[in-house]
Image (cartoon, rainbow, N blue to C red; front, side, top):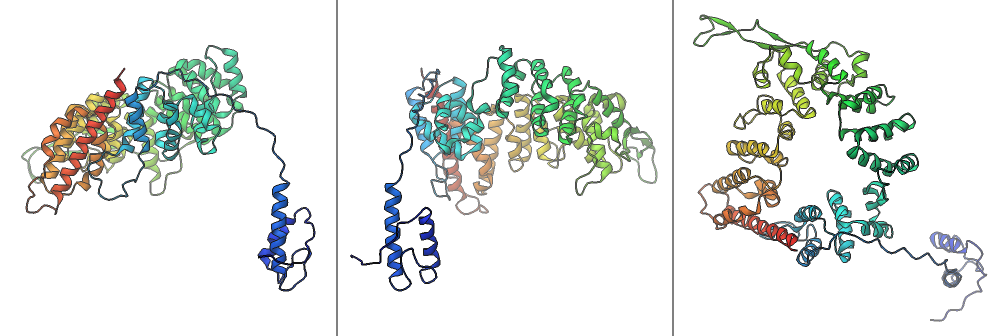
Length: 555
């Protein structure tokens, strides 16, 4: 429709903002430029907006032509076998929650198989097809747990793409140095220049790489700028010394005990306590020994005796006298004086002393007994939990397998815990100090005794694929749960682990479990069908994993 309106003045600079303000306030309160109040004011506002829109579009100056991006770098790795490339495309096409929730059916969860596929492809040194890189970056963007393996597999071309798309900039942050090439570690001048002038991420990557290759050179490089670094940077750099930690690091770490940052001091003390021969460990041993001793005065009735008659015998008992203060020297050695809420100060100080003392201290202090004999001794005045928990932390920190075995006890021990471990989380950490075969054997024995309800954390520390004894123990326990008539949902976490961790060769043993079982009278309605479905999914997933491995091994 043609409209007749009052002439509109040529809008000046900022005219568009003025028109927007007028529209927000309303033409009754503010009239547009060149128009008076009245019924024609809204029409004048629209006409002015139309004119200004054309003016803005016509007056847009073309931008200077951008420099053409450099070509993507070459990836020298061999390409994926065609079947493996097709498999990767299928894995990347699957999306979490695509089924809409609810019953999973018998289809494998491809999103959970992608990390395993990436690990296997990286181990074989393959390069991805260029066309899958966008989907691979999108998958890594949505899952932080996937990023390390995804970016390693994606290689240099993914970083090239990440610089062109803001949605993928996480790849530059996640890759040490943002993908910048590190100098050859033999190039002393290049290493020194990057250390002095590089970005923080580049310096962390350089220090980590050098520490893995030459621990002493990395420590010496850090010492050149240590006093001028920011506290948060000193903490990150100091943490890199965990790699290759040894006695030669002690002088540097002793100096760090006087650092002005409490977090840096605490990390230095932790690293020194992981060196049983360090001076700090010796100081902590003296303090801890003063708190723990054998008490031979505890009397108990001999076997066959009663409270009123029969001989009594002296039972060796561990007596604990926690420290009464936290002095300045203790704080310098990493003892945190302020206890957390709900913790007594003396028990808090005591636990820190024991966990930092070398575990070899206790055999000398407690009559030459072995770790297993020490852990079996009773402890006075309810100090056993605190003492054993501190020994657990020391065994993990010092990677002492003998003490870990003693604290774990037999896997058939009561479910409340072994003789020393006070929680499943602590037992999982202790298991981490054992070799893979011993770890799997212990967890298999635990499952055989206690079933699967408490085993999820313990299974998480076992090497993949599970060793045959562990795999059999898990399958047998699942079969027992099925025969009991309970719903499989209670074991969904373990079933998910089995899909990813059970050796694919076990698929044949599971065929007998695919039929719907006869349900006992007290069984949950329909549980048998759900179990058959769950085992079918497990078998299908195992065979798919076997196919994935075969595809990656194809020349």
